[in-house]
Amino acid sequence: MGDLVKSGSDGLMRLLHGKTGELNIPKPFEKDIFLFDTYVAGTTHIEGIEELEPHLKHGDRLAFFREPDNQYDKQAIVIKTVEGVKIGYVPRQDNVIFARLMDAGKLLFGKITSKEKKGSWVRIYIKVFLHE
Image (tube, rainbow, N blue to C red; front, side, top):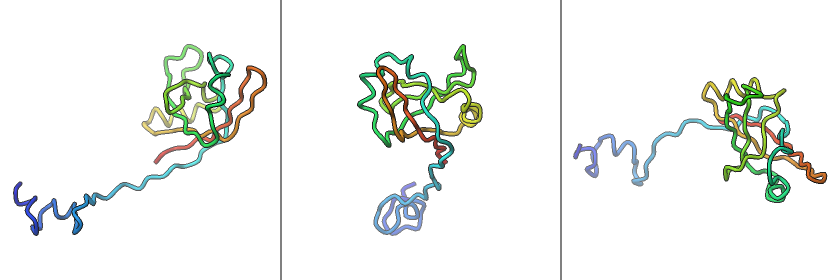
């Protein structure tokens, strides 16, 4: 193993670190693929949504989590802020394919595109992305 670390050697470490000494491991090709425009369902059932709403900004990233034990919808996908605060669900009519993708190990997430507030009711519009 010592030969790999020696300066000037032709070992694995030189191959990975290159001339500048920086780690030069090839990174896989990654991109975010836009899938769908929708909204956050169930915001009326979220306690404190009125207080949370001013902190939700255009472009904010939202995390998606499967909830297969949901008693109302086996395809349920919970939507949370990056801080882990639940704000609702992907609408039931939109979640079947997204749930299948997530169950297959794909990473989906959302971004807020706009929102509207009417009294205690908040509608949050989002774009759904697949991270590949």
